[in-house]
Picture 1: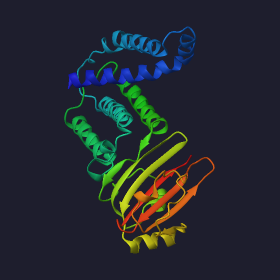
Picture 2 (picture 1 turned 120 degrees about the horizontal axis):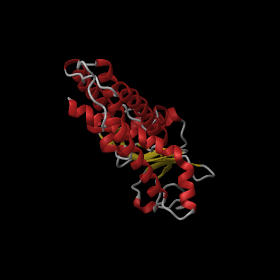
Picture 3 (picture 1 turned 45 degrees about the vertical axis):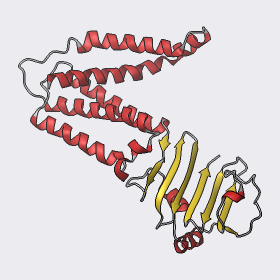
Picture 4 (picture 1 turned 180 degrees about the vertical axis):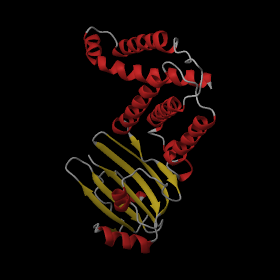
Length: 282
């Protein structure tokens, strides 16, 4: 457990120095004006801070005398470490539907309980020994983990990409949009899209019976136009850019495009029994 504690302490201080390096933003601006890469400056500062933390905090962090287990330190260190690891995972996995919705379930529902159970088992049965800096590391780790977790949710993109027979449990697409985009009994979903700071877009198709489509149309109040003829519709209608010849007839078409070119477009293919859609807020 001593090796795990050392790894956790390094991870915690790395996260703390990473966040601290962002407080020196004026230096990066000044470096850019001088023609120096801001990335080089930030990495140099981060490396220097981490070296300082290693030399003056981690290296000298010995076990307290008399040696005995400390569950309080264990709780804080484990919680901070898990929060940091998962915040980093979520940041890098934010654009991958495979990692975000593994096995048709929001990955949060699988990994977070598993990590907490593993940590709880170690705290109860194999707690860390009390260290001189253990309580400080635990507090710093908890604060940094929560900050990184929240920053990842607020600043990182959220992926809606998913493919499966049913929508995943814990799907992050807002419930109101799910009701506006997908009929209740739809299946065989294929969805691509993401949202971030002031933007959101999605493109999808799903299998829907005519009966369920009709109920969906009446419930939402969308104005669908039935197209049976071979005359092409206006190809400038967006955000679908298409040739009408490529679409199997008959189909129902709904378009509500805003001045900023955002909006909702839906097409229900009767021969395919599939609903196609695309939405963008701008």
